[in-house]
Image 1 (tube, rainbow, N blue to C red):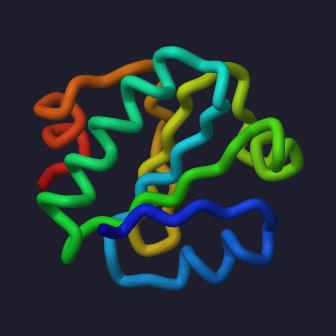
Image 2: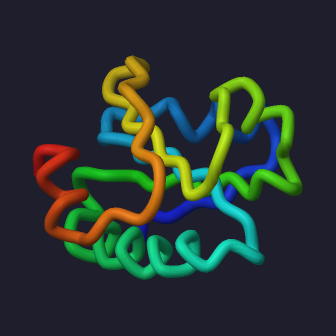
Length: 104
């Protein structure tokens, strides 16, 4: 499984050094839709572990990272391919739809 939790900008920077597609996910423990999306992200990671890395950031533990990515609501996900960040994916997204958005 390729799901990593980071809490510092340094950890995030290290985890972004990858040739895989990165899905950066901002969440909080109290967030119901975040919990629903976590299951989708785990399924995505299990099925496409060789192609995708999921990096999770708890907005309460890492508000500086959330601010840097202009997170205004959660769940908030960001697709990063070859260090290029794409438009945010906000809210819960079902597995098949997320798979299509990522292109895998």
